[in-house]
Image (cartoon, rainbow, N blue to C red):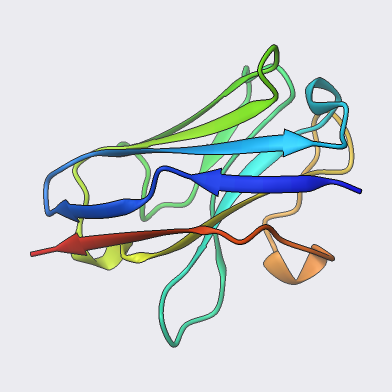
Length: 125
């Protein structure tokens, strides 16, 4: 069974930075594209960013483009999300998940069968 363990969330001021991590077990990590998603209170879960197996190909939601950077360390089976220039609207629980192969991952949260516990990010103004 695949285990996804997100960490690194916390409280930040607007304009600040946080770095999230997602430790993955039970999966040949380097064989799969990965992604970050988030869910704000009272809102649906949404796509944030994805990366191919090598990190060569990345894709971002317009709302985070230029501020967030997704990366991965295949030797450590870990996915990262560097979040800079944080805004109050970035406040959400952040989740990671894996795709269907090295290149493909859905950006539609409802396409995923299970999730980790997430990590909470709160940005104050």
